Image (cartoon, rainbow, N blue to C red; front, side, top):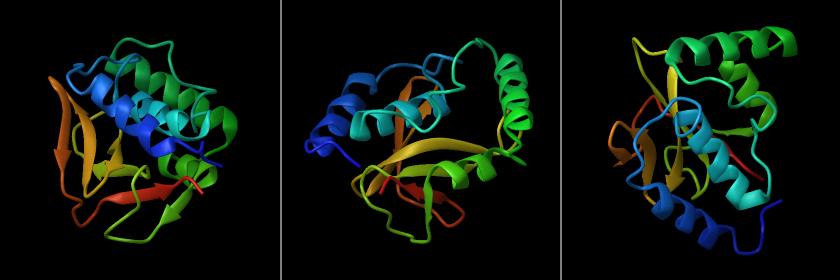
Length: 141
């Protein structure tokens, strides 16, 4: 269930972190998406395992240990168990977005839908882009 003022809370959160650079464990793609969800409904979808790492290698080890311990096959299986996947090219505002990436720690970069655009954490702050084929989305309802 979302807070009554979830839309405003999400917009304020996005504006507050708009120019914050990527930082493992503090402002990486998964912590950003988790905090965006928390702003909308009071708790995030990954509160139980985020943090405790400061490097890409540390994040990978933390994610692998958590997934194995919780018996998820991979991060997408985890997401599907925590949130409802949406099959739409035009997901609702506030949905979690995942963009395929290669050569990274994770197979996808997580972000959030902000109106007609998706926002993801970049090296120098948030990056906004239109949803593309291959993006995955999860709703909060």
